[in-house]
Length: 103
Image (cartoon, rainbow, N blue to C red; front, side):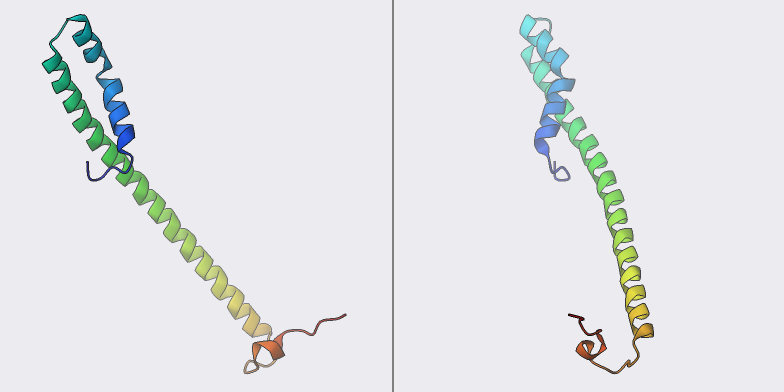
């Protein structure tokens, strides 16, 4: 499945979904071929569901990261503007505009 990062979780989910079929295959209730077909279908379905869930989670995470970046940029611009508003000499270097140390 190309859209799934954690394929082992897909395999575990497919085994859990098809566990009743595997149990019936081992006890002789259905043929092994039927159980393997059901396991293959479970792999496909679990892979598709995993891909959809992963894309949804990634989309929300990306949106949250973007909002956090925008918030931090606004905060930095506000801090920069506040610094330059309080600076008595806007053309002075950073070393000249910092307050002297009292020691």
